[in-house]
Length: 364
Image (cartoon, helix red, strand yellow):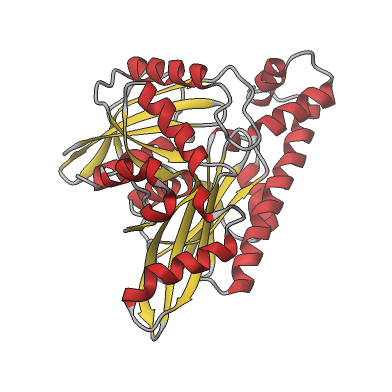
């Protein structure tokens, strides 16, 4: 892994040298801490006979309305919630893998021309300056080579994050008396969980869409490679707000209760269909762009996850829009679970923290 330590500024240098880095890969207990837009989740996985098992999990909602850019607007609340979720889960380990998301994060696939691999880092940094809309001194840059070089052409995945954005996340974790040993991205955590549960093809790609509170993380991947990533402006809060507006309800909590109720009123069904079509449109746009750009093998299946994906008939709507089979990602297809009596199905909410824990486990 090559990290732009010198370009990142000395304030992060010690942390980077001590082992904090980004990740692209998916016994041994491993902790994944997800600081989401509307909740904080933690999972602990343990490997038994070469198979991961979820042994602890907890989630606590944040009471603040999240910011549009995933910045941490209330550090005290975030710190208190992290400490509470760790205690609730019964996790004593201090080393965690967490993730960055939002507008402070940039991920881009690049083709770089180099005469020899010794020049690669300098060339990647030069290319990065053409694509990053910030002063290069304001960001931490990381990259990884994808596949084998083709002549003098090398494909890399570039990750850049604003230093102040990264500092926000690391600071609240450290003030929670935890050690952010690894900082990853939610996109790659999503891919980690998928690859831990499904066979990875070298001739086909899958589109993964994790619907969060304020945005949907889309990853198109195949053969272990994230060919395309996008943070689409669609989330569960927008759906709840639309139900509240349509039915003229006094509180968002009332709309949220209606959204997940068993017997949906027709007015709510209409809103869910309309908003589901919006998400399906975002997924179709991602597939169309990916296909037109010839970035990788064709997308043959769509997998949905995330708490915001619980929209009645969503898999059917996505299939109709894309003409591609669509189903919910099952994080327990191969990963075992030793948890009981969690008060409901956690399969959609656990995907990101599980992927972070898998990442942490890959370092051991």
